Image (cartoon, rainbow, N blue to C red; front, side):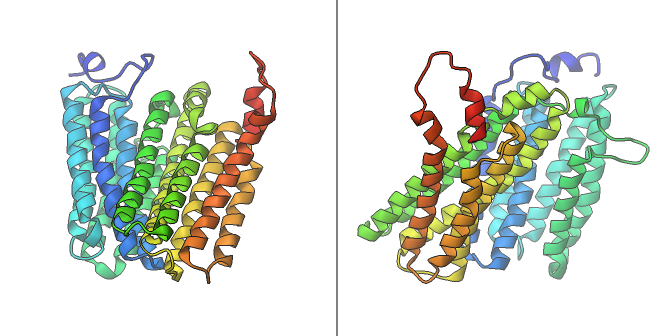
Length: 400
């Protein structure tokens, strides 16, 4: 099998890599997952409910991330890779369907599908990679997923320890990826073994983030359509739109568009940056998810206010901004001051409006985000345009 593997299965690393139709089709499972997660948070936005949604999001994100990372190495037209992606997609759909009752009656379905996805990936790739150096990498990863799978399965059957065991399994898996999957006698992967196509993976991150923003817009629109579309709901819907636009702009400019080039320029060690970007993206998506729920609650009842609603409305944007600041730090080696001020501003102003209607709190958050966008854009707005001005890039990095 090894004789035909390089030509028929592995992607040539020097070739340009664009997202395939199959990868985009695979993302449909994550769209469904985000809708289930947002419904779960909408139903229970208490501290415990938020923690449970975070655990489920981290598990679903890890499925998407490991699959995207693995798919980067392989030709998506190869029949084995088609089978692999469809296997993971179906497992992801099962996990997403189980989200509303994942900590109750369908814990076994959620955990079983999660473990089956990761072990199934190894069962397909390890024999196919026989005689190839990447076989050892896949073997290490599969062994560790088998070990963490014990925590998932035990947690599914031991309800009192479920949250703790599943959270522990996720911490173990996320940590092992950063440690390059070490295992006794099998060593650990080198960074060249884990090297990814930076432009391709960056494009995949952008696509999945747009999906998260789409969830915000979709459910805001649905809530507005069913709200009676009175004056207060219309204002709330407008604030949701402003918030979505602000989040999109803050994500893309400027480091969001330079992540791929930075990974490529770093060579094999760029895999560390790609992995860190994956960790930061799940935090940003969690922030967008919480913001989406807060905006939907505001549109449905602009005058209502409770502690859980306040929390998701403040924590969501703060989570997004914090992760986005860290992404700027690693891509541009800069700390954008407007965004640094924006995080405590959202928290302080959000709590300051806790006795006011939800519409006021949402207006404050949307206003702070929009102000950050304006401050970010001011250097480019006031600087005279000059063709071929090479100072643009470093100047934007300072405000990134």
